[in-house]
Image (cartoon, rainbow, N blue to C red; front, side, top):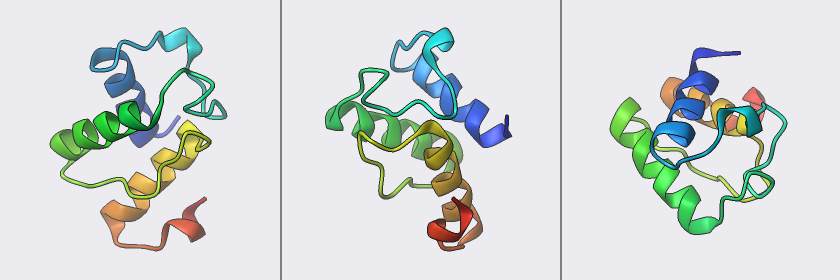
Length: 83
């Protein structure tokens, strides 16, 4: 797993109370029980911890896609080419 994926998993577990055993790169946010408000909270936590805003998350985004969006935002690249 990438360091970015691990950081997101840490935020989901430590800040949003998710069970790490329920997390996988292919899991969607809706599958793990996150709604749009929870996604906003995830984005805020990620911004606070990484200094980078995740843009474009939906309940149907996977954790791997979220990590790619965060990596792309951090590098200034287009997220579509990172997924």
